[in-house]
Image (cartoon, rainbow, N blue to C red; front, top):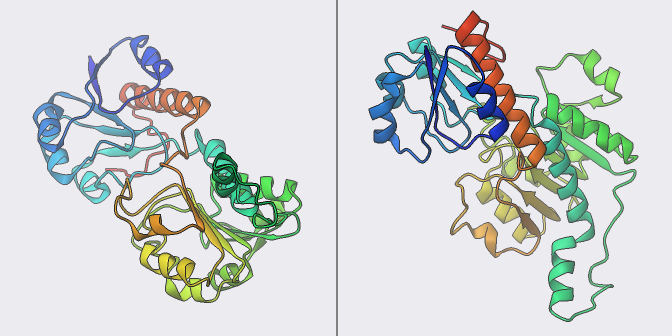
Length: 315
């Protein structure tokens, strides 16, 4: 009997799938802190998580029987990947299951910024009628610049092309023919930021991408440019972003992710030319079901056959 611990909330469809599998026993216990997780993890063959559970080196060292960590979603910055690799524990995610949902949120933020929708809503609720003050801009024929051209970035590009935008992208790990096949121009990072009317980020957070958009990149962007981050907090230097927005070096920003979540006491909260959402990238009914069912299937496949679908580490 293989034992699986589910330490974050998964959609019922995924849990039902696990219940239906022979030779699989599941236990659900959410909200565990590091010490609590260390106390129970030794009994399990697999751990299924979302973004709340912090799988630290201490937890991994206590996981004497653990063979698999399954992340229902994309980002695994809450897992100590080097420690898992050293201990021979497979880490896998579901990179495609919530891709459309996240891409759609980025497009929604782009439209919201271009037409000042949150400000307009607050204005009408306050009894005002500020049509001239809330003059927006069309997104058609503007340049949509995509940093990171994986699954989500490619979906964003197709949405942008459908909206008659000029789409450019930067990703040094994607073959030139992929860009060509999708009708997207491949450019350098420097060219990406200088040409962008809307810059949207869709890359993982690793040491090489931390603060990939900082003061140097913000300084060369158009004054009318806007930045959207629905990927990972830490990709943008928030202090540099605050300075650029406050001093009018760029026109606006929309953030769904932050260096610290929630972003309590962040100076960005003082600004009017930025829109916030509380990490809603995967928050649709469809995406929640998709990531839960997919990680459940991948976990069962691995525990029964050893096939590691979407593995990020190998022992």
